[in-house]
Image (cartoon, rainbow, N blue to C red; front, side, top):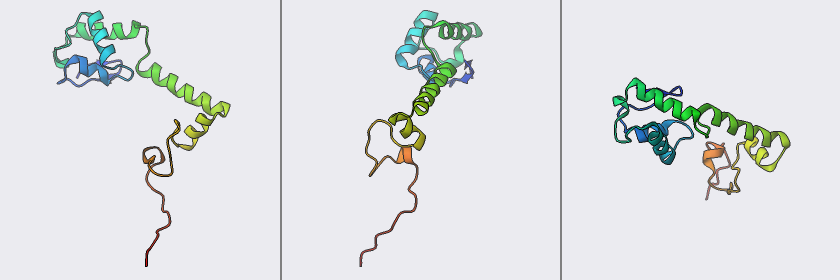
Length: 124
């Protein structure tokens, strides 16, 4: 399994898809990286040589965009800043509730987690 920026990418997938396993890299950016490195998007990740892997790593690192650790750190700092200044969005992040105005009376189970007890209504 090739490792790029500390992430194991799947070896059986085409390299243009395998690169999307890196945080912050989608299909479009993956194709741009491959074009800049001069690697065909059709080859499988297992068929990459060590030279190809090092080319990809250098193109990703010198690129004018953030990915993997730097991007995750920036997102975390942005959320921490919202919490520290006491904004509404920060408050919602702190409470683990939906941040972008979604309803919470029903749904929102992804953010809120499993249901907590509740009152059972029994019809007679």
